Image (tube, rainbow, N blue to C red):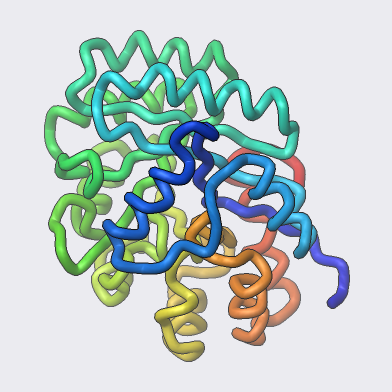
Amino acid sequence: MEHLKIADAHAHIFPGAIAEKAKESVGNFYHLPMYTTGFPHTLIEEGSKIGVTRYLVCSAATTPEQVCSINDFIHRKCLQYPQFVGFATLHPHMEDPFAEIDRILQLGLRGVKFHSDLQQFYADDPIMLPIYRRLAQVGLPVLFHAGDSRYDYSQPRRIHNVAEAVPGLTCIASHFGGYQRWSEAELYLKLPNVYLDTSSSLYFLTKEDAREMIAYFGPEKFMFGTDFPMWDHTAELRRFLDLGLPEKDRDQILCKTFEQVLGVRV
């Protein structure tokens, strides 16, 4: 395989003490077998097999009490692994999300991840709008878990509502804009401030559907992501390359959109 510049724009990491439990919990939630366990060093090992040099790493807090410890963990691992670009977590029911946003900035984290299905809130709930406005004001992008046939919390139309209500917010809608909701992603998410990633989708989409969505939104709106530890880096890259995209579009998705959106070199 020729040398490629690759960033993984969607990877989860967990502290060693809970990594195995997290693997089991996430696998059960999605009724899918997890490829491996989300240890930070395992992410580096797996990503290096395909030449990944940058990783967007995150972990969602399922309770308000978890927020600070998760953000501290992501910060520590970013210091330990310079390849990591850390995204923080927030919870809609935490006491003072604005103070934590200030702390996120002090920690040097580069964005915030929300997983509405796990955190059980509607992505466009009005109580979230002041939080989104503050994140836009300080220049922190938001990575949204997007879509699921079982839940209404994170549907593409809700991310659309957020993006329209806060046009200064950079929104990244994961899973081709909506896991199991790809037609709705096309309907709702073609907006100036919305980007998408390829994670947890290439296994399910036909090559024709994936190519059609990339053409519709534009490769400049996509980032390559693996959803580690759910999927194998090598297999995910092969699925992506098998789409047969033109070299310019391929490189745009593998690294350039990541660089442009997050402001870091790959």
